Image 1: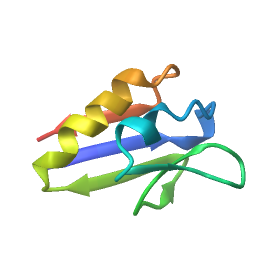
Image 2: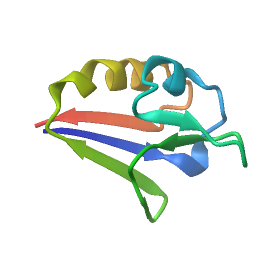
Image 3: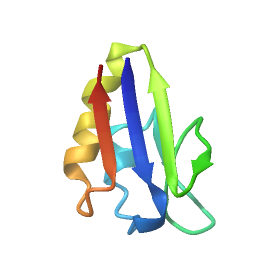
Length: 76
């Protein structure tokens, strides 16, 4: 299981996550911040869970590239 979490309110809109993991992240046209696809807001945290191991590499790249460290990726 891969768990990806985004703290959207702290996003600065650098676009790295959308570049490294376009299947999982998009940039909002409304406010220019990152959106973790297929998630809902839970007190400022957006979480995506998947059993697809192919999500691990691009999401880890996005997390490492994020200059404000608001993306976490866990493999359990």
